[in-house]
Length: 253
Image (cartoon, rainbow, N blue to C red; front, side, top):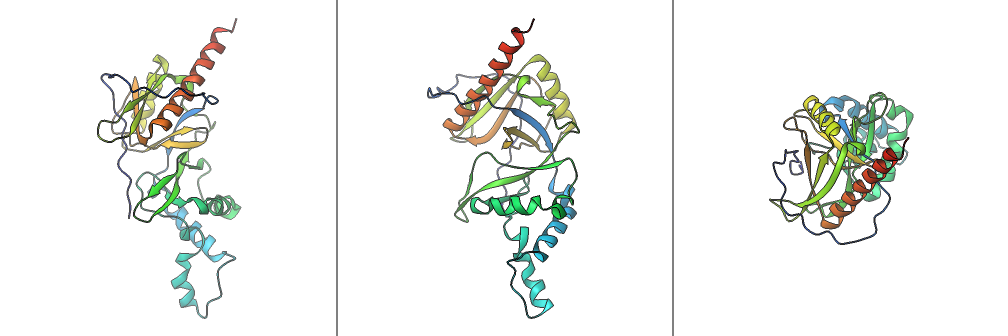
């Protein structure tokens, strides 16, 4: 069983001097969204059924001499064979080379229909390294979408994004300063999801999945072990999107 360090959202009372981020060309603005997630216990039965179906229909499964031998080996086929479970905030870690296989199995109608209609599987934006097992992979998340599939809190609710040093680790955090309206929306969203994980999604990829320990508003800190390059890139692109939205709003008659 492997657990990633606990990620939390905190209210910031003040900001110190921010580290300089190397100047670079800013890529296209990003779409930032906050979503609820499904806890693994919420969909445990569905996963067990998905494991069973993909194992029984694994075309690469060899023929066994007896049902007992098949039963002993079935755990190593289908989805179960490529999902590394044991994470508190994600469904599983998947080796980079196995992602196409997982995507294919989750897209099978018999498998997809096992899960709630508002569930969408999303991958982490950044590759993770497992030092114990000596491999790299991506985390798989079970994101819960609203009925209209639109995030309650999104890029338009962020006034500014600022990289900052992590106080405990030699990594970077990302501070999101909310607009007045965004602060109200964030407060309502985090109140609803206290003691649950939420997904911070950028362009369809999860950059952070923190545990909401208390209702927050005003400013949100993402602690996701960002490198300086990652924090700078994401921050610049969020700010670029906010600037574009502001210009668009002021240009309206």
